Length: 103
Image 1: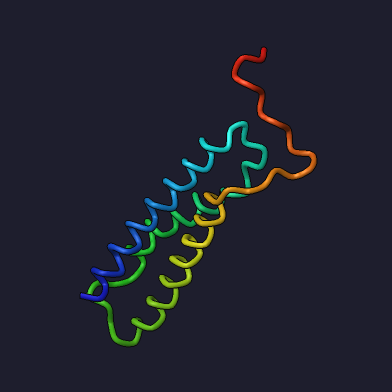
Image 2: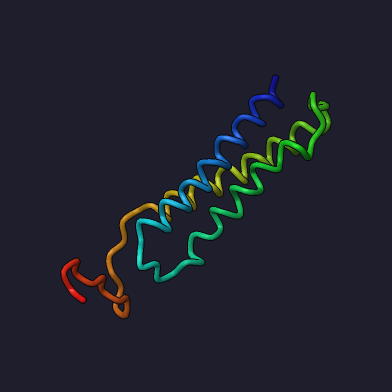
């Protein structure tokens, strides 16, 4: 039961992290710092692969370690997603986007 819940959480958050990366990449064009949110893509990929690493059903001696690792990866994806999708003030040195009617 617990392994099924952990698998589902990993898959959902993995796809959500990859989706957040794509949204951040498309929303912030021209993308000035493309590596800032690359961690979302990498964590999303890791979360999609984690359920294949542990046996099903979980053995009692492995349970704390699997929960610990999953919680850290899920937390990382959550905080990176919030950071990538929040609105930031422009910094000095950032280029201004061109107006739509400019050539």
